[in-house]
Image (cartoon, rainbow, N blue to C red; front, side, top):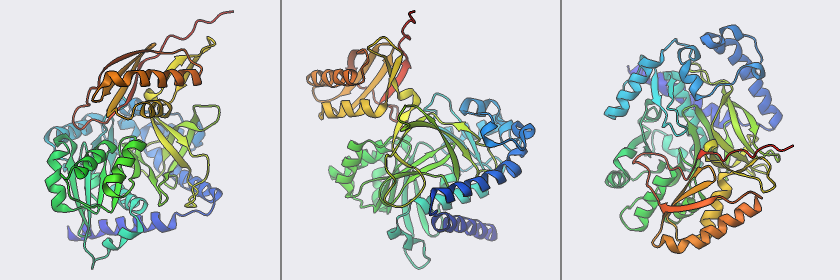
Length: 450
């Protein structure tokens, strides 16, 4: 047992060193050459072991079929290399969700359950070696230089506090003699974690943006006395207003990890900018606008060997930064994770043409600049009706400013104005992700005229 633990730590350390210092590319061409070599190995050695791809051996990546979460679940056994069926994996994941004991494995494999934000809950499989590689890669890309000394045996261990809806062996792999890892269950709420946080005094605080904001409010109110040296936002869109409040409370602006059940997708560099994890992923852009700034990513993870993620279309909307990052990394820089595809709202063009998209960032900016006194808000679109939920001391007083701001947005985007209906804001269930925007039904397409 001790020998296996030593091997595990060695693999994690090797992954850390390789990701932090070896995978630094001097040019985009050098990165793409690395990707080609890794893809060739993956397509030749790993992919044919999954039944779905038996007959596609030797097929170039661009000719392989796309996949998404519903297809991955429908063909679960065919899309993994170990012949694991969906039902046994789902049983393990659901038992863990219900018991809140996330230690059990399916054989050697970690089984996780995604949050189902897209409307489909996904099951993911990760082997022991993949867990170790992931842990090393994550630490390599997210730990600032000032905290690296805690990994040395003669220093105090690095203390990490981690808030998520569900724990996983994937995360607890980080725990060791050098890392004091504490998981906080979001289902218990923020207040329940305050005493434990004060006892641990974490160096690193990792949580969804809304939880970081709740902890920031607790600190500003004098109910929480911690001084983390690094903050990381995960699982939700980090809005500028939240980032400002978190920085006000803790004196540090939060970094971001772009992580999903499909893989480790991106990370913040030392400049605070979000980079795609292109040293481990091949990412195709499905452009959503003529300027080629916004896109849905289609990912192929050539570092995974158990569950095949090949030309997998994510439901996220990303916006590319217009300029390269000053940090010098050649991996693409993301200006914002705007949200999910079903958070893009649609209205008919003024000229009677096709429906036009209103991207989440545009709508958020209009709302937040219109009424600073709004504490929470949401919009649900049903056809031409936008149902707005507001949380404020006097919501009625905010209505004129919101109506004016959204009216200006409709005019700028040259779309027919939506019918606005106002009501109280509904808080999400404990542990659920915040969703400001939700497209429930598009308006009818304008009739074609000849």
